[in-house]
Image (cartoon, rainbow, N blue to C red):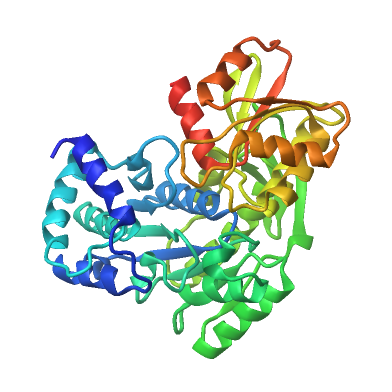
Length: 424
């Protein structure tokens, strides 16, 4: 296989043999010798903040001298981003080699694995091959039936902020969503939950009690924001005994994610994981993560944020108000049609003087013309809307904008990825 052929094969699995449950993932793992059983893992589920939380933990553990594996989704520009060791993406050669090997095993299966199931097993193989000391796993969707949930004895389970997303698969109530996320909880394994959600908390607490798992969550009343910084400066905050912490990720909401991570550090230390204070501080100070108020260009200022549900959008808008008080911004907006668009749009439109409406190249993407109809119903005075059927149309318009403008790409990680790919 070439690299392109490997990716084509992986993506072709998306539509083949879909079947709920963990049976196919377990079958493929059995065929390749169960590499996951030789890995120490931190398992992370949740609606918002999973990727940022995973990136912070990965950075801290690397600063503590560990060889880490990091598995996240979706990718922004290249598939390889999903599988990283020591902060470096899986090399093309390794991806091709492991794809060829697993494709041969998949042919022995009566029902082939899905794309995510295949990628999860590939990641386990690579992490074992690289002799990782610790692997940080982010679920793709939900928790109970997510393919990462084949891990039997993780060191720690984490559940980040809960919200309404993927309701067709996870349920329409917060209780149902929390139950799906809590499916990663294992007997006797400590759990750290973001909280800030009474219904979700009740579900997670009950699950922990049933399985004899220690429950903890951050106390945000003890989180002190000392500075959100600027787009070129780090944030500063204190949380409990952690005074004067420096956080490289932008966005006020990241301080709460960092508090969650500090609670995870406490639990890991109780299990004998060596995480000195210097590593924790350095890890947060130098962590990097794409598409979270990421600066793509400076003149005009072009920011990218992958907020794609109401809770994520609200958090991003709060941060934009902090960075640009009383200033009206321009937005590039595109989203999937199954999102709560009627809830998401009113969150950022009051800040907008112009909105470029477009669509990522995905079958589920909402048409820009339909987005325009939704925007017009909201009757936002003084806001200009521009329909851009293609991403290249958007970029052509942006090239003509004044260097004084502030432009924010928002609504979909896929949209951010496509624009970044064109800009590279």
